[in-house]
Image (cartoon, rainbow, N blue to C red; front, top):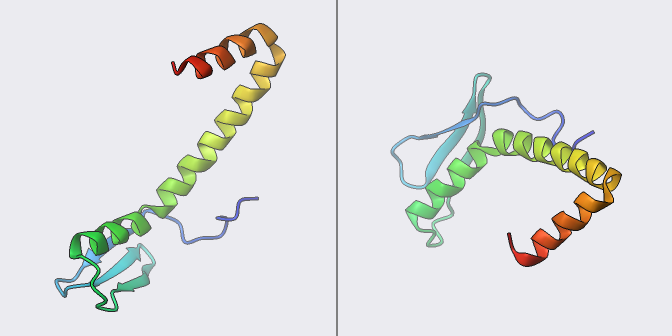
Length: 96
């Protein structure tokens, strides 16, 4: 079980309603979050980048889960072939 199980399914998107420092994260189910700056000097480009990052959360979580599964598989196969494991370790040490 993932700590992300149960979240509102994606895709999520952000809507910049034209009011500075005020955006919403929406899904097919409607608004799931409002993002507001407290006007403490956060640059607008940073505020919007944060909104886009939050909106990408479901996609990023899915990619992390796929990469973790791939890594588990890779580790399993490497332990089955000690020679290949040695080659991979060497390549990592050499920065390849």
